[in-house]
Image (tube, rainbow over all chains, first blue to last red; front, top):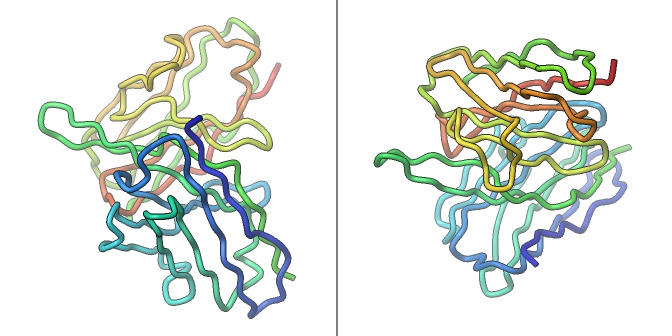
Length: 124
Length: 108
């Protein structure tokens, strides 16, 4: 079955750290760009980080830059998010999401076609 | 940064109704616009990509249109399983993305 499964969420005090993991199965993980997206309780979706298929290209949202680190281990089919200096506003469900790329008339379009079930992070 | 504004924030509709949700972007993004559906306690699900292309397995009652800065998601005949929150997402600024704030579709 093609799926993503997050783990590592939990409760942490402000200023603390957590490391989230996302295990991929059913597809060739090393071929795909990946992201982390979060959703605060009752709120919308916020993209927070991207990593290329090889891991050589990384981007962050300003809200987490300098505090969060995305990484991947293609040998283990896994994506990670190291979260440091956590704040109350980081409390959310964290999703990993796969990027699907479609080329239409030589134009690249991308979207998040596969999501994990999410892992909850509480900061208090 | 590209800002996304969805309208309405919520709507009430009946089964069988035609429903339209709008997404407006702060700058023109051609057709780099995706739509997602999210049900309570679940991860988002991709419905539409490239503004109008239906993701595999998504029912044909869903359709997307628009280009530039104004986009629309239409559900032609609302079904019970369609009550959910819908989000738009711009992919113009890949590899950074922005989502709209969401539109909640509720049962009238």
